Length: 133
Image (cartoon, rainbow, N blue to C red; front, top):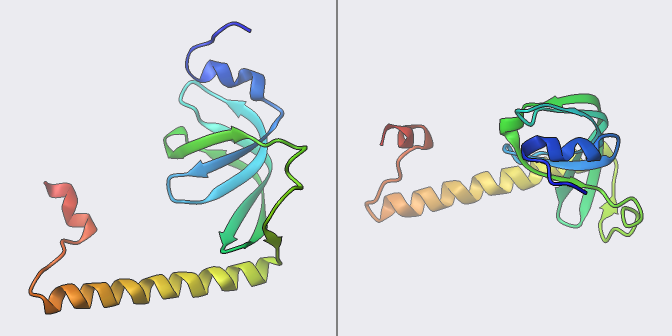
């Protein structure tokens, strides 16, 4: 196998099942159909996998185009080990409800932390103002 620079090395991975982790935290699993010099991806038969604790659910998304700058991780799925999961598969409705509850708990925790910081006379800059520095 000869070394190919950049995204050209992914040519061998076309038509194989891949997991893609995006910058916004989403996880996609699908068959890699196309890639370009900017690492833009086209995934076929894509599902969005949501993990909450020891449970997971897959939401069918179909054909998915991913802009290369949003890809954090790309890896081939080992089809032999895909079924050896320690996680419990649940319905879409159940995993979305679990995700909503988890996000709500995180928001409450953040509110308590912010309140504790304010009580101590400190302030935390908002995320959108950090870009000014």
